[in-house]
Image 1: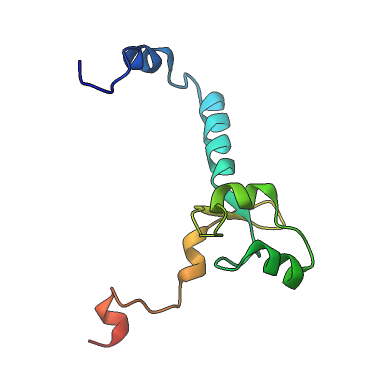
Image 2: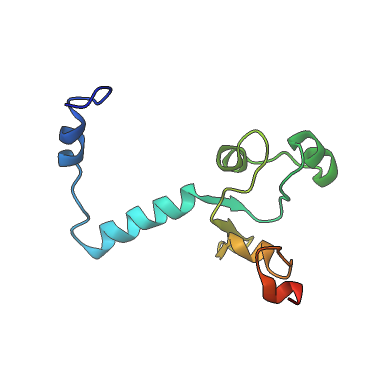
Length: 106
């Protein structure tokens, strides 16, 4: 056995069973998406105190949980006011990046 490895690690994986039907898969999938989503309209990179003053509302707990104490965008989805999920990468569309030579005109 490798040093630092737990002996019961294999037992943990054996206890997990895959979803057997479409309903349980949909329930698990929705739970995963909800855990990685934040409400739309909260800019990243600013301190939470500044956001509270600027937006006149406190940042939700889910936002703090996903982005962490430095408000770094780690989410994969945004939840809009109508309850629809949007891909979080849309917030970066339109901004040119140094990694893409076509956008730089090279």
